[in-house]
Image 1 (cartoon, rainbow, N blue to C red):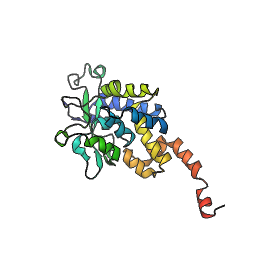
Image 2 (cartoon, helix red, strand yellow):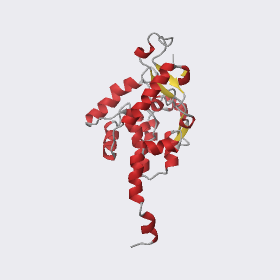
Image 3 (cartoon, rainbow, N blue to C red):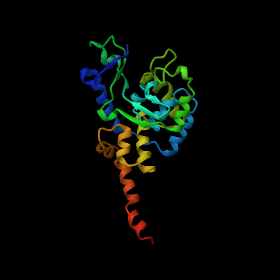
Length: 232
């Protein structure tokens, strides 16, 4: 059954989290143009909501798959992130006391700052409103029997078909990274706000992750004060 486990209590989970962290440093770039095409590619498809949660709200894939209706406030237009789902392979569980458990577990977010409220974007709200009021229970994205969707299932059935249709080579984390890149590089959102929305443990992580974007932004704005105060 699906229950709450804490990474420090399960070495298997901890190892999985460490591997996920290593993968974060192998991200590929998702351009603005490709992001627009990707959202169009998944429009109207079952997993469209997951792409929205990652690209337009900055959720980690486990946070997006673990989002429940009780954490969506359609009146205040906010999403509360307070849990995540993670797959644990049979290979890792074999021979341990976790072998007979569900291969998907529900955990608290990575850090205290990972528990957060994120503004619900209008296009995403429209998708959520398609679900009848009486059916807004359990996971926002689920299989027919009401169970959560595993990460491996999402990748195989929804993520890979979408990116392959556009000739893209991406990881699911690149969708979340696009959120940060767009806010910092295009929208010029302040780094404290971006860090908060993404659930980074502190702004230093945001600075490190988006160093290239921030460097380009600095070059872009290095003469702004002079040009603004003393026009040519």
